[in-house]
Structure formats: C-alpha cells, structure tokens
Image (cartoon, rainbow, N blue to C red):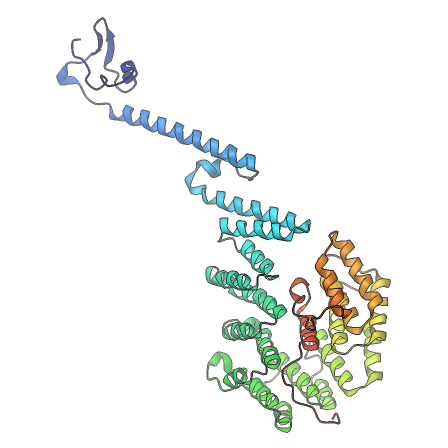
Amino acid sequence: MKTSCEACISWDRPTRFRRICPLLVETDDGLRCSANAHDVRPFWGRATALYAGTALAIYLAGAVAIFVGLRLIGYPINIFHVALPPLWHRVTEVRGWFFYDRANRSFAEGKTAEGLLYLTNSYEFDPQNYPIGLALAKSFQIGHAAQSDKVFARLIKDHPNQQHTTAQAWFRALLARGNYTKITELAQTELRSDARHSTVWARAILVAARQTNDTAVIATLAASEDPRNKVWGQLFSAEKLFREGRVEAARTALEGSWPAPTSPVFRFMLFYRIATLTQLGAGFTALDLLARHPQALDAEAEITVKLEAYAALKADRLLRKLTAELLDAPFTATSPSLINLLCAHLIRHPDVSLFSQLWGKVTAAQLPMNSETASAWFSLLCTAGAVGDRERLQEITERIKDAAKTPFVSLGLVEAFFRGQTSERQSIPFLPILPLPIEVTYALLQRYQPASSIPAPPDRPR
C-alpha cells in the first residue's frame, strides 16, 4: 500500500475523502490507496450522493428558515409550500390572501386607507387572484376612479372566462360615478357578446344616451347590420324618434308590430314600449298595452310601469290602491326588492305620506339589517332624503351607523346633501359609497342629475 491519493491532498481534512473513496485506508505513512494504481476507479455515485446530500441539507435548512420566518409574520403556509418547487406558487397565493384578510379587518375597523393599502399589496402579490382583483377594483371606486377602471380592464383581459361578471360589476361602478361615456362603450361591447344579459346592456345604452343626449350612438345601433345588434334595431329606431322629439312618429312605432312573445327580448321590449309611451304622455295607451299582455312582465317590472303610469296620469286613486295592496301583503324574503321598487318610485315622485306608510310597514315588520337587506336600508335612507322627511332621514342614518359599528363619517355627508347643507346638487359624489340596487341608482341619477334633453309630452295624457 504505497500508492498515495492525489485527490485528497488538497483537502483540509483528507480522512473525510474516505466517504467518497472506500479504497483509501490509514497506514503508518499516512493515507494510502488499498488498490494497485491500475485497479483504481472513481466512485462517482458516492461523490454525487455526498454533494447532493450536502446541497439538499443546505436547501432544506434554508427552506425551514424561510418557513419559520413566514410563519412568524403570520402567513398560514406549511413547510411543503416552501420546500417543494411545484408548490412555490402557493406562497404568493397565501401572501395575497393574508393581506386580503388584513384589508378586510382594516375596513371593518373603519381604517379605509390602511385597508386599501393592504388590498393593493394583496393583488400585487397574487395578480391572478380574481376575487382579490375584483375587490380592489370595487374599493378603488371611492376616490380612485381611474385606478378602479384600470383594474377592471385588467381583470377582463386576464380572466376572459369572467368577462361578463366583471363587466356587470364595472357597469355598476361606472353608473354610480355617472361615467356615461364609458358605460356606452362597455355596454355596446357586451350587447354583442353577452346574449344572456343583453337586456341589461340595451337598457344601459338607453339610459346613458338619454342622460347625455347622445343621439349618435342610438342612430348607429338603429342602422347596424351586425347580426348581434339587429335584434335590437326596432327598439333603437323607436328610441331615435323619441330622442329627436318626433312624438307622433315615436308613438306610431311603439304601438306597431313588435317581436312575438316567444322572442327572448320580448319582455324587455314590452317594458320599454310601456315606459316610453308613458313618458310621451300616452299613459292610457301604455296601460292598455300592458293589459293586452297579461303576465308577460315579471311582478317587479309590472309594478314599476304601473306606478310610473299612474303617477304620470295623476291617477291618485289607482296609485293609492296599488301601493295599499303592496303594503298590506306580509313581508317575505322578497320584501327588500319591494322596498327598493317603492323607493325608486318615491325618489322620482316624492310623496311624504306614502313614504310614511312604507316606513311604518318596515318598522312594524322589524326588518333586520344584514347583507341581504342592506340595499333596502340604504334605499330607505335616500328616499327619506328625497321626499324631505328629515326626521326619518336622521333616524335611518343613526340606525345604519349603529349596525355598522363604525363612525361611518361619509354617511353624514349623504345626510347633509339631502338636507341641503352642502353646495353639491348632484348625487354622483356619494353614490359610489352606497350599496344601492340599480333601479334606485337610476332614480337618483334621474332626479339629481337630470337628462340633458327629454322631449316634452303633450299637455294632456292619452
């Protein structure tokens, strides 16, 4: 055993080289190879195992250190999320949900700025998380409209399978801000691609066009040859006549032949015809058209057009009879929708007496305040202000603040608006902070941000 080992000479502790090469033995002359020179062979497997084991040990030690650090911060992850590369994406996801939870806590404590910062961090950590992105877009709605629009646009691009859901949420945000230009653009896109909710988008286009007196978009849609738009051609042609102030021509078009009841757009077109005839001063004609199609509209739509027609005709007896029937019925799970419907009517046609009856029904039924009824309570708040019932306006404001268990300072601004204590005369500044149903939002916009130009109906209703 006289053959020395050149491979271990440079090692600080040469004896450790025996872990790689078992041929190396201790002798009086130092480490020697137990094999003859021509029999020496490399042990690559053992060398690889040693280095791989060392690297794995270092890797696991680092993974454990990172895991401990993240757990100390509070991230709800497990060691596998850190140690296994295929699960590394879970770390960013968990970090996203962690900051999302922090954001919700801050919002619940009334710390809006802090909550928004946490929510922004959450989305930055996990930009593919749709629920977090949607929550951020909605939160940016208050005070950061441009950023809200950017997040909504990114969500539509990054999550095409959620396009229609995102578009509807974006529409609600734009409507609350009165951004009719963007509403028109979004609605035209969705009208062509979202057949299931096409009636929603058709109405959005109509409302936006009336609020801005934009007849160009109506004329374009009326003349469109796109098969996806042609189904709406007759409606937009009638609307074009209405917007141009051609009353008799519009009435003739509205009373003419329209799609059969089997058409998927029949119900909305019937609703539109009745509502527009009422606006043209042809209330009796509108009610007659409704009578010719019994049960064609859903209950809420039928009540809406009847209330509007009775109000336009100044048919107080019929109006009182209908509202009495609605308020005499016992409250059920659908009662918040009824409250919202009546509130929208009262915002358009203020009536303190009728609101008192509605409020009496609400208090007698002890309507709870929860996520299902929140829209009804905020609708009642705005209606109390719209009809000028200051006593109940204050009472509802206090009830909402008590239920929220936060100062809810912005609610005081809403109350001040309805009391006339601010220089603001439009509802747009406070609409983004209130969880109102679309119909009530429409009513507030029409009441406090009147359309640019609406054709005047004849002096005598027909």
